[in-house]
Image (cartoon, rainbow, N blue to C red; front, side):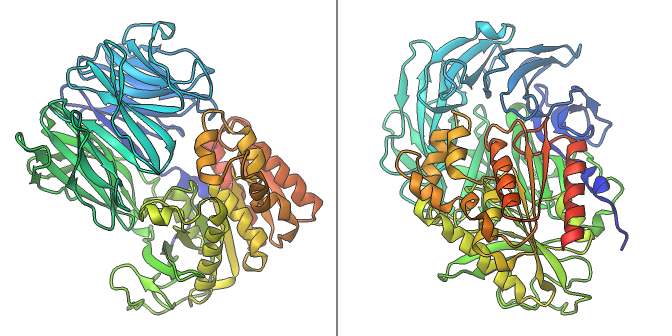
Length: 626
């Protein structure tokens, strides 16, 4: 099997975030051909796309106006997440900075149906809170109208069908939100979801008649289901019950009532396409399900009259591209052709879903991928493989026992899914196995599972990692003496905690923009994020002693394995001081440690040259130590 260097793999492109034009005859989307995501447009399937923005910084979203040949897009600077909003004239190519307030964050809230206005939330007034603004498409940023002063983390969910009201969501944590209807004429903001305890109200969309919302919620349930909320009675009625799996969200065309929902079934996407009944808000006709490659799909954008919709799709062996689906027939057509950098797609390795029994009997799901010559991921171990569940495989041969990278996701309310990763495929090409666990606290498996690591139970999730490593050690294709911990953000904390709590398990650790000290992290994170993060980790006021006790910075002397720490200088979420202090303390304790800081990056690495340097350095580090 041919081998390729990290630069080649990082040049595998992705096309995603599509928006269908107002006439339905062209797409706008994001693609990272230049090394950072930029806006591109396309007028026909698999035609030559046209690049529309040419910045060194990443573009974060793009949205066609519903009525004019113009686009809105967002962009921050150096990864600082203080996004500004821009308007691009699709005819002339002229770009206007609509907000021009670089010290503030701006969060897109959508075009009005006539395209004359757009809504957004911003922390201009107070860095810790988000207010709601409405702005005319041709106004300057300082002319935006403040229509509602917030008291926390607010997001605009969309305009009512008659453009008289906005749907506003307020988040208290990732598992607790509220919804409001904001009347733009009189400023009244009506609370729609009074509740006790933690309840999720997410992905809300106005019903076609404007008399209610469709949303996903776990009110009275462990998993998310699709529901209808009547604005007059505030009664909540079930539309689609996901059972043991979450209904992730809904994309709804409020003129036709056509919709797409996605269900997360053990990490894989199952789409439902339908059309709402006119006389019963909970009834609908099911339309044909599209046949999309890869197993992971999302980002739906409807065309005029909802005759078609665009979505992005990806998978273990399928890099992300945009497909267009005929809503009536379910027929699909690939529109974008993001290249694989000359690497044959048939060389990409696929993962198997497995389940590991943890210290207390909890079943921890994860995805195991073995390199070429490593056999089938489900063979040679004692555990359950997704699918047949018997752990057997026809391929029981192994060329060698391989080192394995345990790649731990961030969040912690996130989920590793079987999507394409150029970094993973690079290491598989180099003979590493790759394991991606979804330890307790991960999303996708219900509210109870997600709460099992809250505050005082934090270290139980680290014990899950140890159980996974023990399990990997029983696999005939895995070398138990060459196990690597790698993770970013909260996953970086998990790396450091795994190395300090279970030092004998690891050959090396890679901490990317990770948390070393929960106290200093919460003290220095962006003001707008602190309350949300304290809801997950514990508060500085009430839990400071506990936060100190679980912070890896205080037990660095326990680490036996070499450590590589990478960070972005402009990180507003996990400030770079977390990296600086863990490197300093590790060196004082005699731990072999390397550091790499990028002065033009934030919470992660988005620029191609930086990604090449970062993952090239990681590859060299592992070559030396593993």
